[in-house]
Image (cartoon, rainbow, N blue to C red; front, side, top):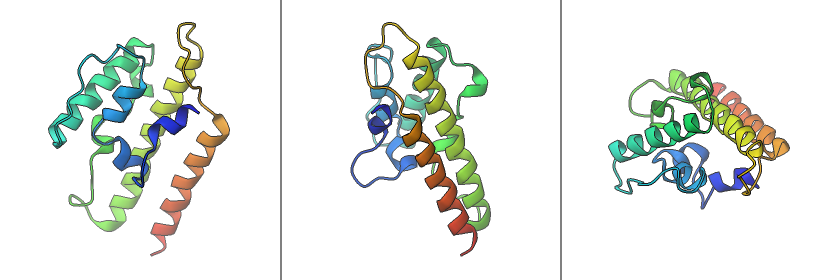
Length: 138
């Protein structure tokens, strides 16, 4: 499944994607020529920017793309209440991009990789919503 490329080990969705490496590896082979593998936040932002440029090259519009800051860890910067609602919004932005990229990939004649399973995708979105609702009542 296409969405399986976004998960590995015991990392959560945001943690698995925040350095951009997995996203750069999952997009069209050859589109991202150089991935910055340094373990720094700046390297992650570089990778996310390159990934988003690749999405644009594949036909996604600016409104379909998340902001690179949507995958940054917000735990230190804002209070608990705002962090949860802000995190939920940011993860939805990332999921929106993953959805549109999956749709674009399934419509490309040259693409022969895994496809986006809409049922799994809806389940992931529901899981994020459920987690957000639970944390709001803590």
